[in-house]
Length: 317
Image (cartoon, rainbow, N blue to C red; front, top):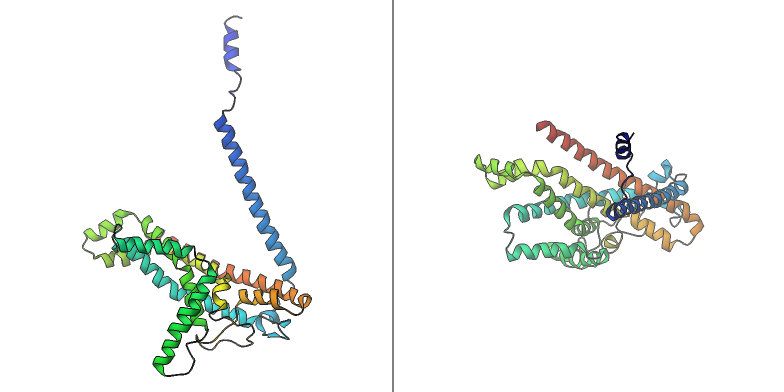
């Protein structure tokens, strides 16, 4: 009996008390989970409210017709067309300049040079500038300075020197430029250094290494920047208020020098300037729902393209 007692006591030892570090870790985990649940609940409430009040309005006639009767009837097809055209022009103008700047900063520029430090400082400050400032800059620089300068050089009346789709797209491209530069640099930094050194050791020039080795490997990260810029560009209102968006245009823009309707600005106008709030409310919810669906569709296209590129790169490796 005396020999079995120590064995039983060692087998049924009491559990150690949790330390303060364990209690703090569990508390932090609980708070983090609570924050995630609150965010998910808020997103669900917002999306549910928009879908509940907007799905009845989204019909085929609403998507394909023009607004009528002071925008209290009709559809939003000109706004859909203008939003898609604006985002596509923005991406076309944004990606080459953003990717080119990131390649120069990461591959060619000296990190300790004063010019490189100034550029990086400017990019950081540019990311924190309010969007309304970009709108005023686009009006003063693109429309008043560049546009009117082109009109004077061509000897024509006001063609380029007015708010237009082209200037609004360039303003949004400038707004999203820091996002593309930062994401592209991170994607280039994620490429293994051995691949770069192997390409140079085999006799390839620096540009050949960038074009054939770095860019294909970094393309998923570059598309991530494009996805973020599409999400932000499709919902911005302040930069395009001064550079091209129109209050009411029941026709489609025929050229980049025309004004256009845009979903975000259309929502702002209906929410603040409508003479009949009760008649406008269903159209407002339907337009918000269409804007969300269009943004998700554009993002989904870019995400699928990124996944396809990743699968192709994984197959090569």
